[in-house]
Length: 392
Ligand code: NZQ
Ligand code: ZN
Image (cartoon, rainbow, N blue to C red; front, side, top):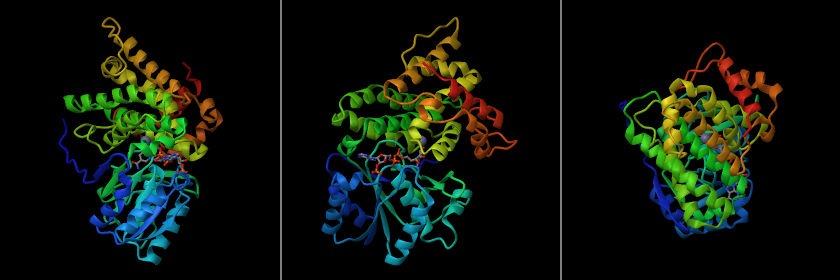
């Protein structure tokens, strides 16, 4: 196991109706004048934003609001939010929504105290200072409610890039599983796919002797395999939603990834798809992650066979472990298909002729990247091509 620091300072406020307490937590973490940030309208229509405002009023916290964050959030709203916060003297940002809203809140939070262009942080600069952020989560997916990461798309060139810093970890996150009951099935499934991908990015590692995190990863994945079909069949199933919501946090605050090298190439390769086609990040991952697995599994057949046996319940073929490894990948893809996710370029609305442009934007040049298998630009192109051909 590698040496590590684990820092996860966020206070999680979990359970039904807990959003009615968010004023208490904004106050606890020093907010006196908040910006309430939300997305395209689901949180307004459900009455959630109204309840959040009532809670802030109960604790005498002033607020302004900014809506309109779109999935695959863009830089224009970040600039707008920074200007608004400066004009209003905002000292706390409250994100009410999913990963896109939370990531925008984080971008505004580092942009307000910074004199330069906030995009500098998405081009390699490390953030040292930010306004405090709290979240009221409405979709189990990105894990941004517990992570120090934010992903934003720059409209000029449609560049989707991320930044990471501990100053971006939310002060608190309200997780009310009932809020996710209004999600369309497709968004539930896309979120679930993202959660599973966050675990797989960590599971496939070259680090030896990591039994504890292997087993934690497997627990999260097995939970998803059990609970996701239950919520697809019965969207109001609170307990299944609750398990998925906590799994989404556990999958990405890094407790399942500490002490081991991680990969993250599937995420990078997917980000080019959601930047170009504006597809849901999870749907893009459903197409890319099994394709990546097919490309790299020979690097460590026994690890893939372990995943097949422990997560997917495959029978170990001791005479031919490769067959077991491949069966596990097929079961993953079949699972994604069964919950309504696309499994190839055509189903996603992506085009084979765009592959050179996608690889170009991925921007590797002659370099290589990835923590499990180091990929070249040609390798990335081949993974996209596997994703074109993929079928059950
Ligand atoms: O905008 P509204 O109207 O709210 O609709 C949203 C949006 O259309 C809808 N939605 C959310 N909660 C709902 C709801 N609809 C009905 N009822 C509810 N309760 O769902 C749609 C998707 O929302 P979004 O916030 O985009 O989803 P998600 O949480 O999957 O976030 C995706 C973004 O997070 C990034 C992705 O790249 C993508 O841009 N990621 C962020 C990470 C991080 N910060 O740590 C890590 C991830 O790997 C990921 O890259
Ligand atoms: Zn993700």
